[in-house]
Image 1 (cartoon, rainbow, N blue to C red):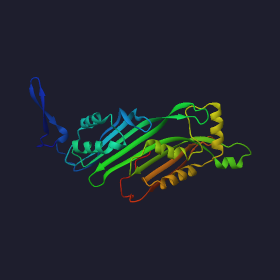
Image 2: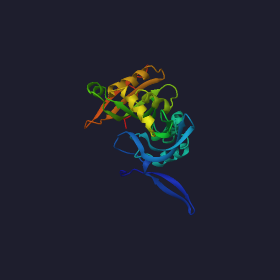
Image 3: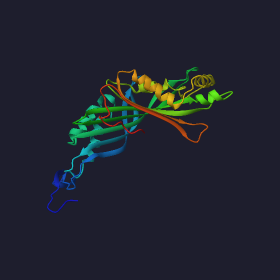
Length: 292
């Protein structure tokens, strides 16, 4: 609300009848003296093209959040500018140009910090282990970037990967068989050099009792069942094994990994989580993204 004596900014809008003066309330002064950390637009469903290691690019549909900070002096931000920036970059939203988009947001909206979150399904053609039957596997992916004057650029890549696990305890105490379940692993990383989403997915799948496939013939079912049975793992084993691989990768500077098993014989899920900072990256840097 404008106080008595305050005058809103004005915009000039050209029309057929001549210039028309319109009030720009967003740029008017706010007297509550409170900075806003993030203001912008959420849950924009938008077609995007992301980098695909096998094919160069992949078309998908993302849910996008775009925010900037708002100084205490201003009443509001210009929401339409977020959409304009998105329209300018919709064919080029990927890890390599996140910094460019964030710079554009920060400059166009005259902000001190900018934040961009892009969540999307990613599909990889995957062949079954014996019959080579092909099918598309869906993986949930998320890119979270920020830019600020004091902390510079920050980018986190995250993947959600379905897995199969067999319970080691069940196998040990049973005379035959063991209970198994499907689970999901969420892996998020910060990195020095470019990293493919496919690489992150492989980090996870190699440490499961067995992969999950979209198409399996009977010989494939026999193979995956026996492979999982010979490779039993708790959720604790899964996150520790993935963490061990990440610790050996000098490109990874920070990671978080969690595993959730949707138990087949219990009325609950089993869960484990690890977060680690590596090298010169410290806990004083930007907080990691919320898990989704």
